[in-house]
Length: 133
Image (cartoon, rainbow, N blue to C red; front, top):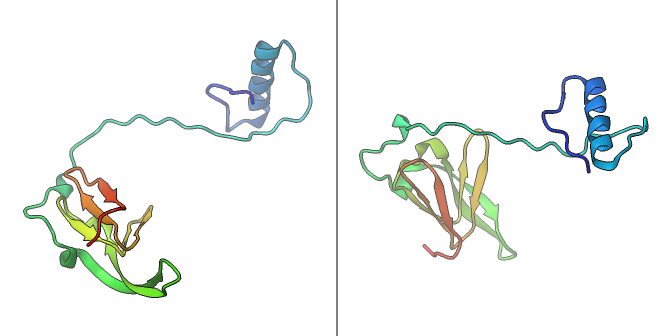
């Protein structure tokens, strides 16, 4: 594996030149053989900012944010009624007990039976898979 810092991803010819130059610097030679981009690593740094939409006047309860119930399988014992929650409806202090599903535009969090979730003041979901309802 040869890592290329700041690769020219929008220009394959330039990326090939960068790869060959890096290979030559590391190993003392580079050939004109075909190359392949295998892994892309991205590092992102963003400032943390307060989210006024995450401030709750009171902790929500499990019943406040349940939007619907589905039948879901977690094991061979059969389907279980499972609450589905919109993540945007989970305010800080909210606790949700599994089985449950929390959904937003980017992710789906599955809480199996016996697991619990709590929303912190920043909107992060803290999950304990060993807790029972």
